[in-house]
Amino acid sequence: MNIPTMAQMAAKGETPDILFWVGCAGSFDERAQKITRDICKILQHVGINFAILGTEESCTGDPAKRAGNEFLFQMQAMTAIQVLNGYEIKKIVTGCPHCFNTIKNEYPNLGGNYEVIHHSQLIQQLIDEGKLKAEGGESFKGKKITFHDPCYLGRANGVYEAPRKALEILDAELVEMKRCKSNGLCCGAGGGQMFKEPEKGTKDINIERIDEALALQPNIVASSCPFCMTMLSDGIKNFNKEGEVKVLDIAEITVRANGL
Image 1: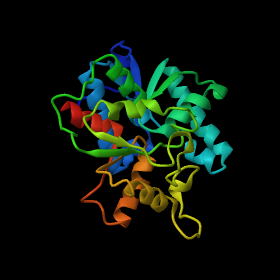
Image 2 (image 1 turned 180 degrees about the vertical axis):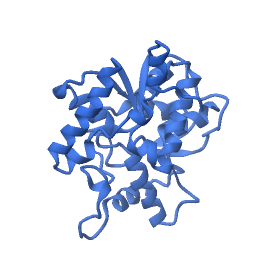
Image 3 (image 1 turned 45 degrees about the vertical axis):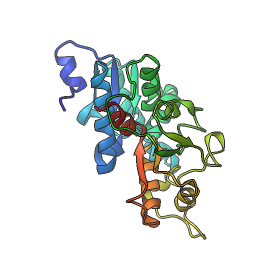
Image 4 (image 1 turned 60 degrees about the horizontal axis):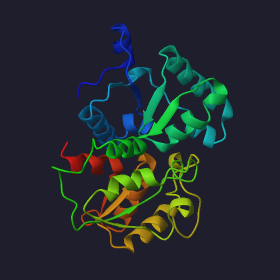
């Protein structure tokens, strides 16, 4: 995929309509890299002029802040803001709710003011504009899909309908878990927990969550967060259901449905 960096565009005197903030998981995690590629396929398919920072992109500082290291967070945040402001970035789309929440809600206090949208919101917008129609691709007819709400997308920012919009246009059955939307259950990776072993208890939270999902007998557990993707996938493996139940991101489902 030929995706320009901000440095390359700046060298030509060009400015993209939107910056795609890839994120640490989207850059380095093999599973999340597939989601990154699919977000880029969607952006290219609809003709959005976009760029990435490439090697100039650094961590937003979210994990450090959630783990309690405010000093490290501010160092990382200020580094990112300096780069973004240097390119006079106005609009950002993210592939991760953690990046989305941090850049949208915490960067303004440090001098970073941007319009920030999550990729599920972009997909909803493109569906509303008729640019994505779930035609000509993989059929989801007869499939049962349940959506897991990422905490930093849902409860932290009130984004519930955007990811569901991508599922509602499919010829599939959308079923909700008992704990969903504002009452959703965390996958267990938020608050810096992604990077440490869980505390002792009777049951890991991601196992609890997948247990709830599997009770609906779905073909697909959908989400829109790379951290959730890891935790949910591990839960599926715990029950030896990899061959029966797929964990897919909203972007991956959109790409398949549109045959991109």
